[in-house]
Image 1 (cartoon, rainbow, N blue to C red):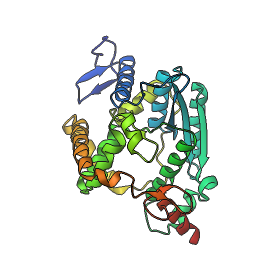
Image 2 (cartoon, one colour):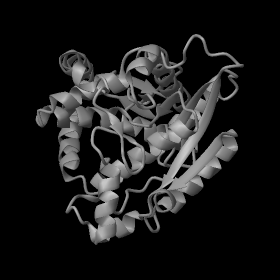
Image 3 (cartoon, rainbow, N blue to C red):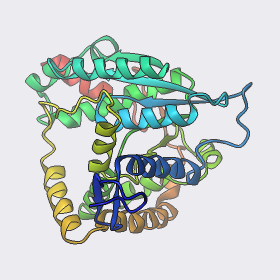
Image 4 (tube, rainbow, N blue to C red):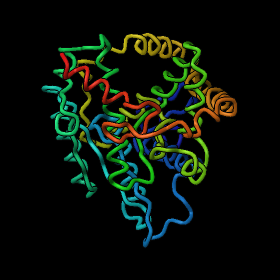
Length: 322
């Protein structure tokens, strides 16, 4: 196959668009989609100046998605005096897993000259995921514990670092799978939260969110294309599945999604186009439930929560009690 744009050998064929692209033109299309998403989601305020820059904290795990996101953001905004980039990595305490991805993160941020913060479950929460999985006091999947702990640390450190925005490396497959799961589970309130978290101008979100606003600039790029970009750019990504990963339901949805995409190219894009419109409608119905009026501070750690004690503290207490 030849590249549609230059006639050189193509490295990929996008079934959803019919395009055949060489390495250079493929990487250019990925970068273009990320920059377009940043522009369409109004992530960079017009009033940002060198004297008052915006601070973007990037959740950098060292996996392909976060590494590609960091690379593109650094290439686009690394020399922009109106934007300060900070990478934030979290060590969960999983033997033989996170150390290698942290090495990849450190190598990348050193090459890109980006400030890099590393925090750990053990130092900040007093637990290690290996121990949590062994004790499992709530009889839950490991990802359920880890998701709560990770979100809390990302949020608290993003706030501590003065972030105007927290950026994560969720790709198109991640988003489409989550959308389909929420629809299959009938979770309309969760669908409404998608609109609150991912859409709308930056200034509007700043007025309504009680947390650091989040963005997902990779959400238009399929997972395989993210992996190919990392390979072609020779990025130091650590591509290994967590040994405790056990999201069985998501795995089933993923298989369904891949089958639909193979037989009907463009399915993921169609799901997200409809889901985002549905999320806006759901937000108009449940918006009053997310205005933050019922939120307070956790009496133990001070985190924002709708209860006296936040979910993170309750889980830690359960682990420590075993």
